[in-house]
Picture 1 (cartoon, each protein chain N blue to C red):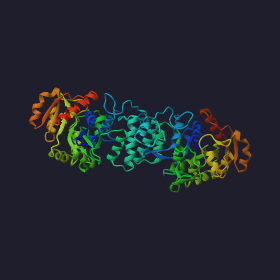
Picture 2 (picture 1 turned 45 degrees about the horizontal axis):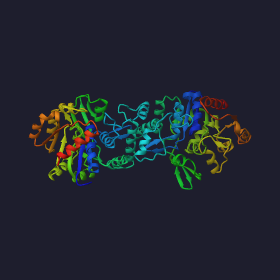
Picture 3 (picture 1 turned 45 degrees about the vertical axis):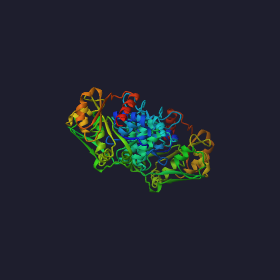
Picture 4 (picture 1 turned 90 degrees about the vertical axis):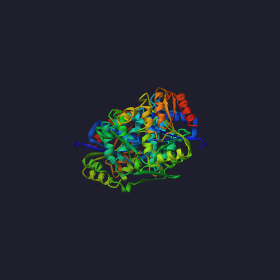
Length: 313
Length: 313
């Protein structure tokens, strides 16, 4: 990696969009640390929704309009899995399935998660690196009125409808950042918290023991940290971040997110519609950048990424 | 099972065709004991070519003209697996892949091979039962000038071109017939050796310690055994049985097959083109049935199966 390398922390679709914008500027000088708390086993295969969403976006394969999965994918295998009585609410496309099959085979053959993921990324021609936050499994769980649910049970099967009463990151206490993650922080000249759910996308990454220390050590060296708000006008563009923030006692606003990041971040990026929150955010000790943060196409991803990188200089 | 239950031993496509003809007459009174020596792991998934060929034929899903795989299957996942650098010479269709994914998931969850296979068969609505010869892995290996090869390396990757110098059934000494196989033999009123390769389809089944005793015990009770020649006019309709017989010192003819089965079989079925071999076959101590044994469609499968069942009465 060159002298101006960047570490981005990302979860789902919003994070993947900004990661792709950053990759357009940075190429192999970008390392994306992804949340693995959403990972799950489906049909005996390890599925990594956040890693894979970033992978498909960086490879230009993602479904237009949805942002996850593979554009034009088919569901022949999934329909047949359903015929065999397999649970079918988590619908994996045929091309997507190949990723989970190849990954699981390589893990079962003894491969380390990070090595296996990097190999799959190289096969799709990625210049940037997508790094699992840890090689040790961490699983986000959501407590609802029905008790603790696996994250994808809440997120996909129950369509994020139940109220979230509590979150936990099962396994996090046994996890640690990988050597690749530690090295990326050590070499970073800037750090970006992508517009991902602060509670269940960025949250699990920061819950890995040692991760906050890596971030703090970089800041102590003078490396600036920027966060982009995933909340625009009080709402999440995608996913349950707004309701989850409110349910767990936070404010569903850019300001509410800024408060969560107050001791971690130097620059906070708000959407223009939230310009009136900028002054209060600055009282938290951050600089602010107010701009259009909605990424509708490759050009707007690259533009926002460029503004974010400029704000860090 | 009713009073007139039948056990059929089968390997690949020819055996699957007769099994389907038998199923048309017998429904749930048919148990097909299948060779597992061809089984292999592809992309971390257990593939069972002989079980699956019989499964697809009994379910009416098989590819017309080929006899294996799923009619109209697509290869989206396979092409993507190749993009990830996975070996792609063993081409699995998307619908076919679902079978291997579901099976492997259930085995990894602790399922017993026979239970898992029966569950998959029931999901496709089969009345007959397809029984793996053993729950213990047996792997057919082929010695060529290049040394010992896994069966599918020889059969699919090298397209059966190398001369076969020797066969072995790795793991067979540790294998035993399953309780279901033993019960099927115990209840059988007739036994059919399908027109499958005698060396690498029927051979591994008979190589499982205890299998020949089950067959002998049934014959001692007066249960007739019939074998249908897979060699017609000196040639195999499909696969390398003819060349393999010749290379290993046998005659590539119906008579050559009959000699291999001489101490196991009561009735030997030859194709009409081999009528002149019938008298010599009878000197081996078997009755013969000479008929048209080529199964081109469902009607000819059922007709041959009907003749075979009648010959056993």
